[in-house]
Amino acid sequence: MKRILILISSFFMFSSVYSGGGWPQPKGKGYFKLSEWWVNADQHYTLGGLKDPNVTTGLYNTTFYGEYGFTNKFTGVINVPLLSRNVVNNLISGTTNEIITPGEAINSPGDAEITLKYGVFQHSAISISASIIFGIPLGENAGGLAGNLQTGDGEFNQIFRIDAGIPLGGNDAFSAYGNVYGGYNLRIRGFSDEIRYGAELGIGIFSQKLYVTGRYDVIKSRNNEESGAIDGSFFANNSEVTSLTGEISYQITSKVGVSASYGTALDGKIIYAAPSYSFGVFLKV
Image 1 (tube, helix red, strand yellow):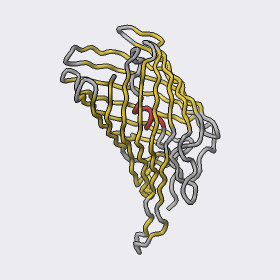
Image 2 (cartoon, one colour):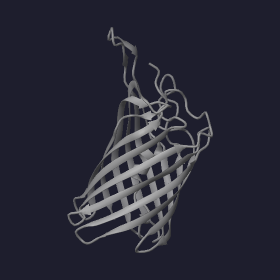
Image 3 (cartoon, helix red, strand yellow):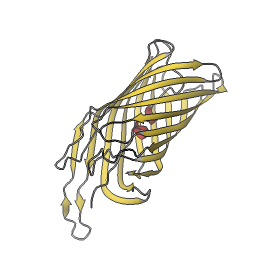
Image 4 (cartoon, helix red, strand yellow):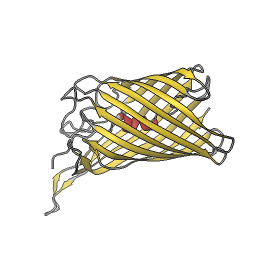
């Protein structure tokens, strides 16, 4: 079976970990997280949006994420997969149980992101921020015997993003907020640009020790380039996805907590039809 061109796009991966929304970090404050994220799939969405089977393929990322407020309006954000593992299982005959194609795996750092975020407008009713996100190609873009195992796409890209955060009321025991965003991903090396948008709703309960967050994210390709990825890679051109992600975070102390998330693609093109999972430990300073 021919392996499909597949993308776990930076929104499905990166937007889900992008914290803060319309609110920059206050000066001297920070949020840091070490997490494990993974997806393992035996089917995918085709170019026509239908589901087809594929050789079981997985991506596993051990990621460091951090935000720090340099001023009350200016925040720096870093998102670095310290270890990314791309795995393809053996392709086994359904009649003879013989291995047709042996499985492979590669390990390397993954593509990183550095974000500069500025608080454009801050008010009790709404907070608006503007961000530029630089994609840094630290991953392997041509691994394995056929060169189609990847932990990165090999291209520098820039995402321009606007967030609008809205507090939805609360007190010491309960709080809620909403956030909407829109962005444009400017890509090079034959990859199509992307339009991105989404929304987030968060609720804090039990004196805000427990947070439940839901995210809705959309990536639409501009389809302005036809090349950009090799056959059977993890990073495909002109991929699209509409995804939902749910996350639960619990603060064990005033500074330390744990989180877990579950994400799924509602529909897509050239992307896995399988859920993603993550578990992490975070620190607030």
